[in-house]
Each structure stands twice: as structure tokens, then as C-alpha cells.
Image 1 (cartoon, one colour):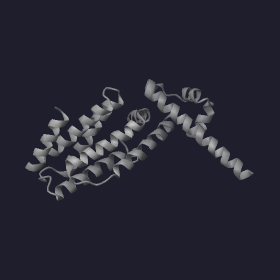
Image 2 (tube, rainbow, N blue to C red; image 1 turned 90 degrees about the vertical axis):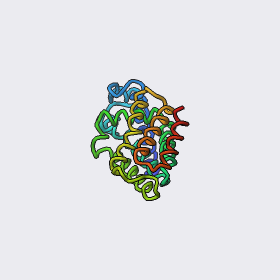
Image 3 (cartoon, helix red, strand yellow; image 1 turned 180 degrees about the vertical axis):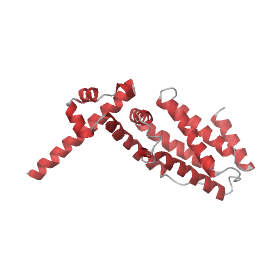
Image 4 (tube, helix red, strand yellow; image 1 turned 90 degrees about the horizontal axis):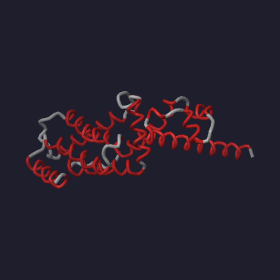
Length: 217
């Protein structure tokens, strides 16, 4: 009986935590990061302010909980298939990211917005998502070079950073509501292909030019 009662309490706690997280990200997405307060989240979640504090801590702790979910999901995308062809790899990566964001746009907008405001993309407290993203890009550059797609005249570290920036900048526009996900995909993919074009062999450069003409008529 004690074990059953404990399990019920844990289930109720998990449901309250998910309700609070859901209302917190809805609040950020609807009214902006500054509108997020523990009192407002508690009211929306129909729990007391002490309950929110007991389950999560302060406002920043609540945002970190939202952000950790984002990091876990992005890391799963980064662990996707390793392709050598820069065009195929870029399209596969962007399509997986877009599918991820589209699955719950409110959550991802809120998580990115909160992460940016707290500086989580500038410090190791982000769980290393930025460093891991750049490392994945470096791996792609290495495979592309080994397979003869790139000339190797531009440092991989520079190419990798620009590949990361190619999807980061349009992502910020999407997070802030300036563009939709279809436009994000177009801009991010174009940016990645243009980055590869800077070090592409003649054959790859011709293919990239043809793909860009299709992507941006």
C-alpha cells in the first residue's frame, strides 16, 4: 500500500511539473520572456507559488528546465546519419531540424527565447549544444574533404563555424516571429550551401549552383 501511494504521488508530481512547464513555455511564446513570472505561471497552472518553487526553484531554474528539453532533442538530431555529400548532408540536417521545430513550435520558440535571454548559448551551461553543433559540422567537412568534394583551401574550423551560423541567424528570425519554418528552411539551407561553395571542387560548385537556382528561383 505504501509503495502504491508513493507511485501515485510521483505520478501526480510529474503531471504538475509538465503542466507548469507547458504553461511557462506558452506564456513566453504568447507574451515574451519578460512576462514570465512564477506567480503568473502558478496561476495558469492552477497551483500555488510555493509549489512552483518547490518543484523547479526560481524563474531561471524554470527556464533551464525548458532549455534542457531543447538540448536533449537537438542532440538527438545531431546524432543523425553521417553523410559525406555536402548537398545531401545539408538537406538531411535542415529537414530533421525543421521537423523537430514543427513538432512543437511553441516549445522550441520559448526554449530558444529563454536560452538567448539567459546567455545559455554563450556559456557551457547550455550543455555544450553549440560546441557539439560545430563539431558535427567539422565532421561533415572532414568527410566531404576525404571524399573529394572540397578543395581543402579553407580551414575546416572556419567552414564549420559558418555552417552553424548559416542556420543560427534565420533561426533567430523564426524564433522572433519574423519568418515561418518554410522560409527558415530555405534561408538556412541556402546559407549552408553557399558556405560549402566557397571551398567546393568545380564539380560540386556546379551542383550547388544548380541546387540554389531551384531553392531560390
